[in-house]
Length: 401
Ligand code: ADP
Image (cartoon, rainbow, N blue to C red; front, side, top):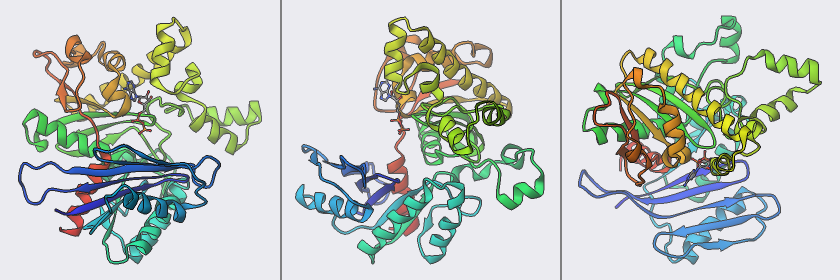
């Protein structure tokens, strides 16, 4: 059965998963053979954690100087754990920004590399390390097809009314300033899974998908195609996140500069790394915030209210954009695990036809499930996301194995 290695190379980390994919259209499920992460590359305290399926994790705490060394460690860990990578049908790379040109999973060649490099100014923290991972993997597996899967791709079906900012048109075009959207691989995966779970063709369904992790975004999906999403030129726009502010009056930026003397870099850092739930409540992890709320912490309770309200507002906006809403889909760390957030988002949406079932909402499962009441006009679902599997499937589709 074909094997696909999925790689997500960050500025100081490499995450990976090796899949064995089913052949043909049987009932067989894809299997994860191993996965893992190299963290803090180039820093003190580098660490590799390799998790072979059904065996104890292998942890190596040794300085990893750079990404090449990181990949070497990963390849070696497969050998040490007794499950070598073996023959690969393809390697799938997560690439954050595909811009306007890279709208489909793309077989990597010189032209694709140049096109990914061309998007780097739009994602300076992400595309360069993504490319580095691609180059190292190509050198290590010269005969293996490599595929790039873009976080922005799913959102490229948005109509201009959703992706345009009301800026001077020429300037926006020249600098490619527009809304792109991110988390596309996750929104695509959960919208497909939601349709499967509901037993209806994706083409017939209007969904709002809510990817709520450290980063968070919502998407309006009509007939399987994205028509709007909350993130914009960068992942800063939209929902309140762990450390990002989400929507702001842009004049806050000038005000911070003029009144507090902050530089552009200071403000970038403030809005991306010190705002959101961290700024409001002093903690960015929702489990910690839940603990604070339980202890009666007012700031944490208010932060939760702001968090849920922002999402609810977008659900209303997207119900209007879609014209008819069939299902609301929660996913990612918070969406899958935090019933308080799900209840907080759905509260007051009865007018839109959303009625949560409190007992179903509290239940847990690793599989897609319905948490709305039987009488709810809009189905509310929890669908676990799996971006790695989506990348593996798209990779296989491109290499035609
Ligand atoms: P990332 O965007 O880094 O992939 P995740 O999707 O893992 O993030 O989401 C991280 C968030 O999910 C954190 O705020 C964390 O508190 C929350 N989360 C993860 N697991 C649980 C859980 N079992 N219960 C409640 N919250 C959880």
